[in-house]
Length: 500
Image (cartoon, rainbow, N blue to C red; front, side, top):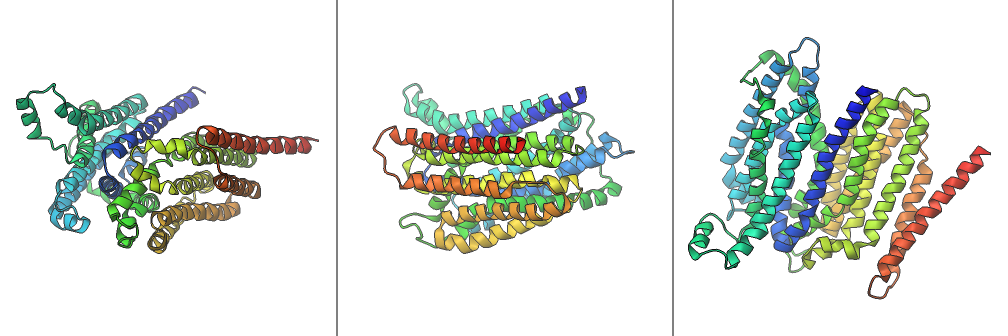
């Protein structure tokens, strides 16, 4: 019992740091959208999307590989850590130098010739992330969840504070009368108030570097070790993980990269492609409400599913979990979508509001992703994890083809639909295959009805006309309440009928 309590506590700490991090980063959206033009925010969106892909290449599955080999009988954890850390440092240094040598052609391709420093900052961020990754993994292996979460949260808070100071505080201070002319001139030697994009990356980089002193203990006893005997089996183990990670990242991030590449010129009259990308990236952030709910569920559900796997009643239990998960997520879908007149003010600049149409689509996409995570338990419990690779690669193919076909016709709305289609098909395929290997009595027809009814409620609400003021929001939430209570009453009535 004490072991389970410890596991639950550590899971909560790991989950808390991730959840708080996502929530706090979401709170930066009003800062960015109030200070940056959509085209400037498009630069941030694009480069961080590339960074997400390269982060997979920098680590190439070595965190999980470290866990696997450090726990193998006969392996000394210290030796495994030394070798894996050396391997990651060597490969990330090589990749960073390679990217910096390609700086000019990369800037020419991306159109950042006037700001080559952007790519330099991103490469340094990737390198510092990789250099610390195995140390963080060691904290997890050593069950130092509190230190892990503390350093992660410190990094997040520091990133936010630096963003606020460098993007907003320092420009205000320079315009105020509190500084002498000499002080202003000195600051302006190092600070350019007309290039706020740089300081988003600089904030991230500084916060990354300042993690090193707090992780000295995790590096205790470290020395450069290159074990040629370990190298090959580790790579064999890690490569499928990297492929799965890249496929997952394609599903999550590729729309942001392809939007700039395949969007026709003048699709949005008077706006650049970077403007469209900035609008898409900012509005994408509003789907974070569903993302947070799905992530919270994932942290709690995975250990729960594994702990209940041997229970003879587990299939029915898993089906009930899925049912209530879908209902809760649909409530989130309706609350966010039908209260958009309030939520849109997170985007401080009205220029971003033109893209709000994609938010309900992306909320539904994340609901389907949550359903897929729920369904994925079948291949984890049956040790058929290779199906996860197949389904992820299928999803990546749908994402690529969907974006290429839909973006030229529908713009960023097409990118949103491609994401939704990808996750929906992944969920359907996982359900169909999973029922053959690990049958679970999901109430698929009922849940499909709930999803359709929620979409009908939203579309019906959009057709109604309301006077200005709070009446629209009150009516929206009353409709949502009636919808949810109706479903709960029907469920209660059916359960009573079964009991009889």
